[in-house]
Image (spheres, rainbow over the protein chains, first blue to last red):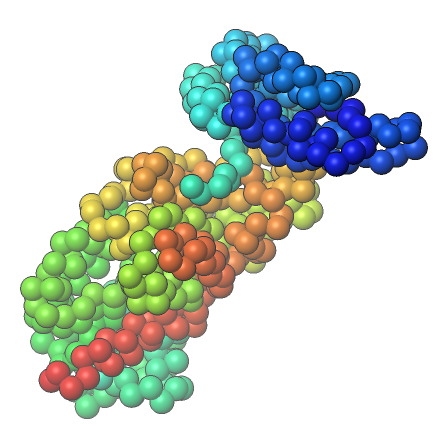
Length: 163
Length: 328
């Protein structure tokens, strides 16, 4: 979120305090002392993780500290995984393959690159899946694996972190 | 130390040459190939045997067999380097059992018997107070078994990841570098001598899976068998798939993966960033070991070749000699 506050001591702390109090996790704080900030107003961008239900309470609390919330950009699907699929991707109903992930509500196919060399030859696709969290990503991958078994597609997964 | 060698293929011959050239204190008292055998308790003249094999196609006396050497030869350690049968492990399995039952150490490069009957062979060796060592079965010249059992002793091994088949790695390297199709890269691998006439075991991921079974049993004990591994080969990979990976600064490699905590035991083509330590070129092998104390360790080296395999076998032999020195 982007905040505007007075360029005075204690202002930044006042703006950040409600975030930790409400159980949010601050990922980054970026000061912007560019020409646009007029007079004694300081622009600050904060990247944070918070439960969506607590967002409105947070905004109210920040405002009550005299800090102006200029803009909020939400990124709900934080986990990204790229997968390559080989096989008869179109003829096994690509729309359905994508839907099976999208309909979960916690994961989506957000990008698709498809190469179709010739009729009757297997196509190759690179898809990007985004999910709310790691557990959801694992669930989405399980769905994709079972779809692939059903449609005789080969899935090439990235080599993930060993936990 | 006196050794008897079964098998005079590329590995057996490479081993004999190295033992002959290098003064390692190893005396060869028995040799057998599939057709013949010879023994001499004072030491066989290696050059003569290699010459005989070249000229006649067999090494010694046709009335003698490998089993005669095992049961009646005068040796401390048997080196078993006969061809692999991945399904039954035979005849190597019977050879190894017979030597262990006679109270002789065994060193083998043969994946079949170790992948099939590791725990039986290990307990047979324990009963008779001898060792069975198999460094050469996985990763060629890479001393991964030594690293796991000695260098990393006391560590908990959390996971193992490996590029364990040089043929597959060569094919994937060439597909990525030159945009070759799978068929073209396989043909090239054959011409270069990296792939066998029947490459099924390699490209279907079976050879990699057998090596993963051997690693898994060596590290975590248990009785893992080939059928426990989830296997996908590289034979349906497309050049397009490699290009799609390349666009993300990644490539595709056939990776063996064992993570017991997550019950993962699988061989499959995987997407890896070019900067990943397991991304090695050509026919090289690489093995990453994740441990609790040492963190992550990656070993890279030549996964095949007669002299490279001889290196692993000689390492095992000298380890046995040194660890039993003074006991006899």
